[in-house]
Structure formats: C-alpha cells, structure tokens
Image (tube, rainbow, N blue to C red):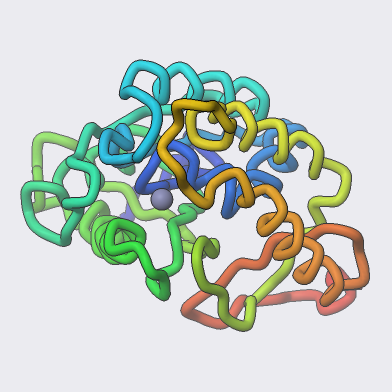
Length: 236
Ligand SMILES: [Zn+2]
C-alpha cells in the first residue's frame, strides 16, 4: 500500500536573490494568494553582492514585498550570493525546505539566463525536487514529491508553455517590486546601475506576454513536460 502524499503548500516559489520572484512571477504569486492559495517564497541568498542596499535593508524589503503579495511565508536559505552552484552542500537545504513546506507546485527561474546564480538556482531546484522524493536521501526527514515544476523568466525568455493573465494584480506586482527600494530607487550617492529602468522593462515584458493571450498584462511560464488536460473546454 502506498501512502497518499500530503500537500501543505500550494506553491513553493524559489528565487536566487530577494527580488527575483517579484520580477519573474510576482503576478502569479499575488493572484494565487488572492485566490486563497497557500504560497511560500524561498530566496536562496540575501543578495549581499548587489551594488546597493545592505543585507538588513534587503531583508526588510523582502518582508514588505511578501506582505504586499499576500504570501503565507518567506524564508531565506542564506546561500552565498554570486556563488550558487549545483553541489551537495547547497542541494541539501533546498531539498529540506521542499520537504518542510510540502508543496504541490514548485516555481523556479528558467535556466536560460545571463546571471550564473539564476542558472544555478534553476538547476539546483530541478535536482532538489527529484531528490526530495527519495527517502534514503537525508532519511531523518520524510520524503515529499511535488507534482509540477514550472520555470519563470528573468533576463531571457523563450516560447512560454502557458501565460497567466495578471492584469488585475499588475499594480500589486509593481508595488512589490518597488518595495525593494534599495535596488530600484535613485539616490544621489547610489552606485550607478540599470535598475531604475527595470520597472519599464518588466512592464514591456508583461505587456508582450499579455498580448499573446489578448489581455493587458501576462506572465509567461515554461514547463519541460507537456501539460495534461482532461477537458479541453476548461481552456476557453
Ligand atoms: Zn537575481
């Protein structure tokens, strides 16, 4: 007899840096949370290598953004910023956080990206999701098998497997991004970065994905495997 899997979290969303989730999947997160789903965010690093903002400031900003998005919890694994790679030392905390929150669906950054941390996070979460189901790995914690893994886009995109209409939560997504003021504000003594222009780029991206499904704003996601549908009429 196989034991039935218990899911305690609907969506567990991973990001490498404290603002990644907001940029790539903030709309989906806000929308699911507003629909009463239990959503938990996991940042792998504290973003200590960013040109602006201290770790303390960034942690407060991440908390504020989480409150705006309406998620149940947000945790930080404290892995080293700019040094994420797929190795045992980093795999274990990711596996353990999946087993702790028992999600039905996992979201991670897409592996096609410019930032090595985003690529590594994508690969790390992909491996961890599989290993979380193996009861002989870290046997002190019960195994857990999430049902699906979808990837969101940061620097680059590809043809999305599906697009979520985020029009009704778009302002909330923007607000959550702007909560990271140390990253997106413009101060006289701030190190020069491209970040003040980011909101515009996010809007262009979400406008484009929205145009693909004839809505104002959309977020695209990639699935490595085809999506199973029982009733095609649920798509219209
Ligand atoms: Zn990032």
